[in-house]
Image 1 (cartoon, helix red, strand yellow):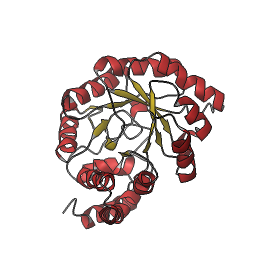
Image 2 (cartoon, helix red, strand yellow):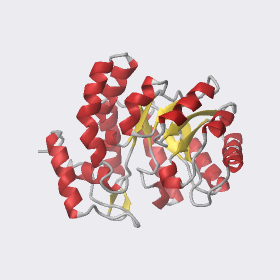
Image 3 (tube, one colour):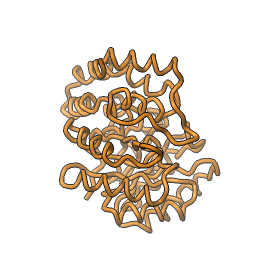
Image 4 (cartoon, one colour):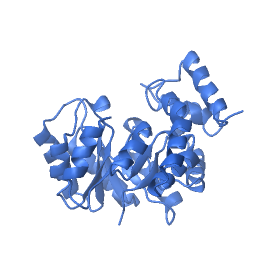
Length: 293
């Protein structure tokens, strides 16, 4: 049974000559595991999932499962603004061997709170693995309110929420009212420390693509109650967290991994390469962190 906790990486999807770069992806996964990451999250926003064909989606999940099996769990992204299509994606991921599903709230069509409840309830009823909600109103224009998250937490296989609303008040309300088998995990690297201090169980991290060892260590220190060490790591990574959002995610993080020599500098439209000025600022941060020479 999948347990939502730990330092998990929202991993990028490398491309080469317009195609999924499977060899580089396998190396990225191995690097994450070798550096102590607790779980892999492929095909999310950071993985440019919206631009993948169904065949590519299935292959990315399949490779993730192959590389992680017996080592760390795979929480597969399966989210769009069409409930029927989410179920189709979730079934593909489940068949490929994913341990659980992460599903972003429907974007653009702006459902009501009742619509959100029915959306997630219907997905949960059509999969066998656990379902993790993903609340990121800055990208979707829809906020899964605490009352709705708490209501959804009563459904057996809805096991948690990736919270990226930026509101500790909202997180507190969910933690206070949720069902016992439902967990809250940070979807924002900046808030891992404060969120875990009030009952969060870890982070699904963008920064871990560049610095998995530091993200994993911070989680371990917080989980062990070593808050002074955790604070040092928080401040050490702060500029790197900031750099990951110089432009729209995943442009900076993918550029960082490219500058580290791990993937090609390739995106799929409508995303494009990082602007020259921001790229140099990012390079300076990576050099300061000793991630590149």
